[in-house]
Length: 590
Image 1 (cartoon, rainbow, N blue to C red):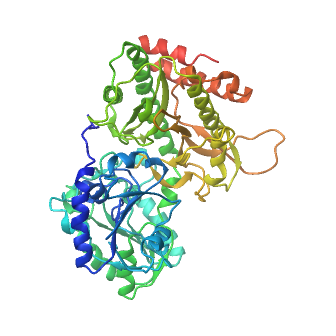
Image 2 (image 1 turned 120 degrees about the horizontal axis):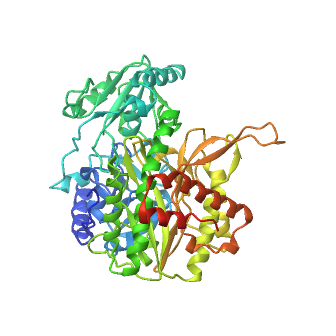
Image 3 (image 1 turned 90 degrees about the vertical axis):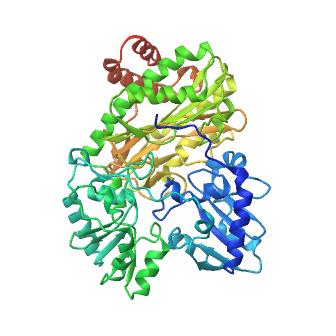
C-alpha cells in the first residue's frame, strides 16, 4: 500500500517548538524568521528532512509559510487550505492568514510597524520572492536555518536510486535535449545556466528517481554549459552503476564560484543563495526563466502517446472501482479508508502502477469540502446514505502520470447538491469545448469554468487547472488555468480541468479530467486565424444521477453524450462482467 493513514500533523507540539524558535530568533538578534513549505528546489512536495513548516506548526498543506515573530506567528495559506489549517495548528499560538489576498509585505507593515530584522534561509527563498518584500520597512537578514538548530531528530537527506528513463517514453535522447537547450542558452548570451528544479533536471537527462514520495524525481542541482556539458550535483551513491557522472552536494558552491562569463539564473525558482554566490565571485548573472521549463511543458508525440496509454489503463482501474463502489456503498459500513484502499488495489491490478501520483483525496459529506483532505485514522469517516463522496486520485505509470476527480452520489442526495454539481459540470464542459486564439494564457480561459457558478453567486478558491508532467510531478509549471497565469498555452501542454464547489461543513464537489492543448480542427468558413483547442485524455463516466438535465443546454448534453459514448467505446473491450454492465449503464445517453 503506497498511501498511509497515519496522523502526520502534530499541532500540540507547535507551541513548545515555537518557543524554542523564538529563543533562536532572539539569540540571532532578529525580530522574526520565515519558515516556508518549500525546500531548496522550490518543490511542492518535500522530503521529511525539509518539512520544516509541518514540523513547527502542524500544518501539512503543500503551499504556505509561517512568519514567526516574537509576539505572533502568522501561518499563510491559500484558498485550498483554509478549512484544513484550522484543524492542524494551535490557534492560541498560530494565526491563519488568508494568502495571497494578504501579502507578507502588508502583514509585516502591520505586525512590525517600527521595522525590525526578519531572518530567512537564502537556500529556501527565491530572489523574486524576496524582492516582493522591498519597501515593507523590515530589514531582511540571510542566516542559517533557525529551525534546523532546534530540530534535534531531523531526518537525513533522501538517497533514492537514479534510474534511466526509456527514450521510447521520453521521445528524445538526453544528448539531443542538452544540445537543443544549450543552444538556447548560448543564443541568449550566457555561457551556462544553473538548474535547481529536480523535474527539469530529470527531464533534461532522461532520468528518474525516488527521493520524494509520489514524485519520481532526483533531488539535485545542475549546471548546463553552452557547449552541452552538464555538471550534476547530488549524492553520488544514487547513481549506482549508471553511466552518469555525479558530483557531491558540497561541490556545488565551489563549481558556481568557478564559472566564467554570464550565468543564467531563474529569479523565480532558484534560491537567493545561488545569485549571491555568483555575484560575490564577480560573475555576471542573467536573470532569465530556467531554460528547461517551457520545453519540458511542451510534450512531444511520444510523451502524449504514453500519457494516453496511461489514462486508458487508469480508466480501467477507475471503472472497476466505481462499479464496485456502486455495489458496496448501499450495503453500508464503508469508510473513507476502505475506499482509498480499494481504489489503490484496482490500480495495482493493472500491473503497471509504480506509485500513486499524490495522496488520494477521499472526502465523504463534510470532509469533501476540505479541498486537499487527507484521511487519517483519526479523521476516517463512514460513508453515509444521502451524501456526496469526492474522490481525487491518480497514478504514476512509467509512460504517464494521471489525475482524476469524480464526485458520486451515495444513495439519494438533495436537489441542492445536484444543482451545484450541474453548475460545476457545465464549467468543466465549457473548458473542454473551448476554442481559443493562439497566444492566450490560462487567465484568459479560467472564467469559462467559473461562469455557471458565478451566475448563482458561487465560486471556488483554487485554480481551475494545473500542468501535469510525464512520469514526473502531477503538478507541473509553468502552464496553469488560473486567473493569475499569464503563460501562453502551447501545443502539447497537459493540464487538469477541475472546477469545483465546496460548502464547509456540508459537502464538496469537483470534476476533473486531464486535457492536452492541440491546434483546433479547421472550421468551414472560419477566419484564417490560428486557433487552439483541448483534447480530453481522461475517459471515465461522470455520475449522471447528480445531473439536473434540464439545466444543460443542447450543446452541453451533446458533449456529455459524446464523451460517454467514447468512454464506452474505448473501455468496454477492457472490462468484463459486472463492471461491463455498470459501464454500459453509466455511459447511456441522457
